[in-house]
Length: 186
Image 1 (cartoon, rainbow, N blue to C red):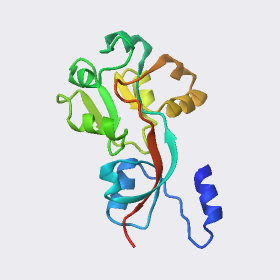
Image 2 (cartoon, rainbow, N blue to C red):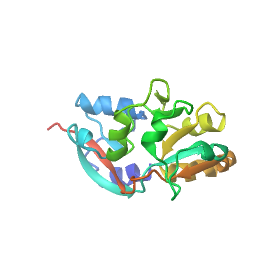
Image 3 (cartoon, rainbow, N blue to C red):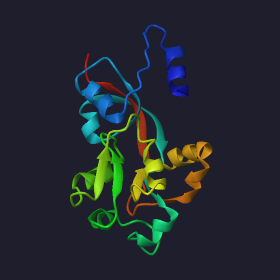
Image 4 (tube, rainbow, N blue to C red):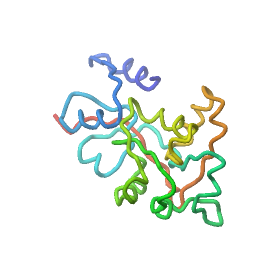
């Protein structure tokens, strides 16, 4: 919201209307060429084909979120990093992701390869996944992917988030570029 406030004040000749839309809807609007922009879009090659980007900030890479008691069940290397392909192949653990959300190009590619049927559920969220952490806390899923800043923000509102662990994913060390995306139209 602060970014949008800042932009609105500096673009007085443009009519601004805020629309709350989840990732799936946001990208459907951009793909159709609607006169909308997405204010916090993760930049990736497939998305660059649909939108012009103006980078706004780098973010630390996505990490794996699990209940603390689940950590021992994860495929971890000696450095405590999650082996994502091994995790996706594990039929005993249920993951949950947000449909239409990008987790950064390297992870998106691994997630596109898929997992055995039923091991990863993609949900359509009213926003960008605020319901994932409650799902984990209630035991309705075993793991999710999230940005460290989102977990820190959730912890300010929900003390029970302290029951979750955030683990790095092996090979996923690059900063993720986020920015404003607008459709490739005149």
